Length: 344
Image 1: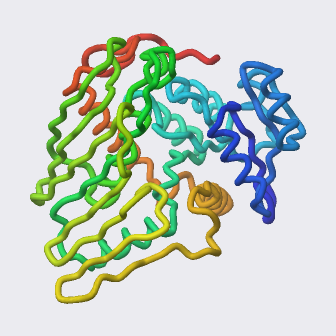
Image 2: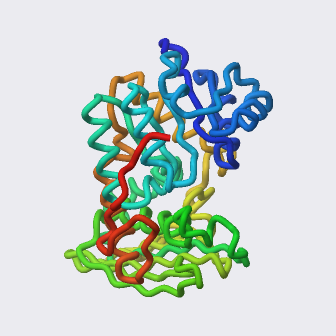
């Protein structure tokens, strides 16, 4: 790493890895130096597509590559613990896709490993790094709508997804909650922190994953949060925050918004829009830039996506799954893994 350039490694070659890499190579202070997959052919194809100089057919070689400053882990979330753990143990800094892990036990293990080795670790919760979301949070924190009373958010895809799809596969941590519900839950906790009580209901597939889930979150302040996710119905992906003196609405795409509307008692509505200079609304550059800022500064976590916040979200996801009866292979009834986690 130099004052001008942070060198990245990409672990996995799926769609989200491609989207992130495409945004990353547009940043003048980022350099993608290597990519790894369990398939050497897949790694080479990805490397050729993006002009990456090194392609590895295993994760361990990438983890041990000392020319890499940060590894972006983009595997299915069932492999996050192993993949990110390999990189942290080898001395690499890590940006790990959401949901951070399969459950909170795995998440706590990664956080402990990062702190043991003094490495940077962050969940790729790009919503938290989005300038429009950051502006919304700043207004709420400054009391623009008074004391927060309710938060509502939804994320649903129309599907239908066949049983063979990863979203229906228990072996890959399938279901609506971990893939999509992590966004409404994270949005609510961005504004209110970890809830004190959780109630939830879900419709489960024949495979045992949740097709749609609704949860009611409550806080000791008296605030309530209503979150919903689905892989059997497309929703507005909207969000609303109501306070004692007003309301903020995100009409669509709350996790990467281009605008929101502030309603304050006794005033005309105010619309806040994205700055065109910040790039496309679906850009992942903001989280990449935050990682590079933090790594250059010698920080081991980001104040925008703190590790304690990530653990709190994982606890909520675990609690919701517990209430609706979704458990994955290798988990005990309390959500803990029973199998040993070994390097790939």
